[in-house]
Picture 1 (cartoon, rainbow, N blue to C red):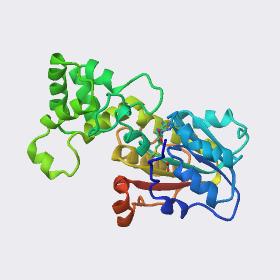
Picture 2: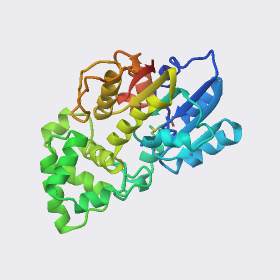
Picture 3: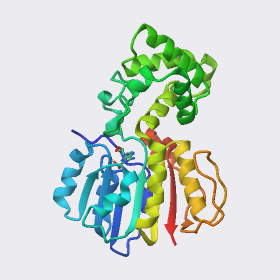
Picture 4: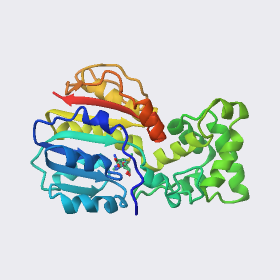
Length: 312
Ligand SMILES: C[S@@+](CC[C@H](N)C(=O)[O-])C[C@H]1O[C@@H](n2cnc3c(N)ncnc32)[C@H](O)[C@@H]1O
């Protein structure tokens, strides 16, 4: 199987990575291995621990595992980052760099059998790894209120109620079993005016919502970020590339809260407690965005935002 994923903002990421010392690194979202490969090739690496919840990533890690004895990939969820470290030979170690490149890889999206894509015929699945939930069960079994809530909360879709109503109507006639069936139902619910004014496909937000819910992506991120603080060295860096606003707000709030700022942008994040310790220094006051030339070569990078913080 060929790796179809083109790493995003790799130049920008490298601009933060120290070149003058030996590093312990975690690549928490291995994907097709683009970041790990470049890091192993270009930097002085003591250990590189990679994580990905998708078992297919083992295919892409083989070459690196054969070439580098200081590289390991663990198939697990990054919300268990601290536990994963404890279970490896690295349990006594702390890390200089922890990297997250969130969302799905092209290897997942381009594989129609995984059901991530609204314009490729496939089963309604959307699981990144082994999870109990899948998109088929949600679309065919959840009640209207719950469906609307998921589509609104995780997709920020203003037509969530109309879409939920239409899903319920359609599934009474016939089980909704494929991505294109769902995509066509959603298309009918988004008014023409709205379709024209936005460049994005009308089913984008509904598919994003289902994917986030199926994989519990926001909780995964929150839990994982909290744990990174315990396994980073002093001066160590957390770098996060996110692709949609719900994730970016979680990262921004986490950095703000742990660097002494009270500001809270997301209702998904708890209130800032008065006695919270300061663990981080924010390195990127504003998120770094991909260059126009990267977006031209790799349109999937267009919504990427990179934020970096340093442990104090
Ligand atoms: C954008 S891709 C990473 C691409 C990678 N940086 C590269 O250069 O090839 C995101 C990867 O993160 C994985 N992932 C997403 N959420 C995860 C989680 N909670 N735990 C572990 N892996 C996760 C996905 O399975 C996917 O392979």
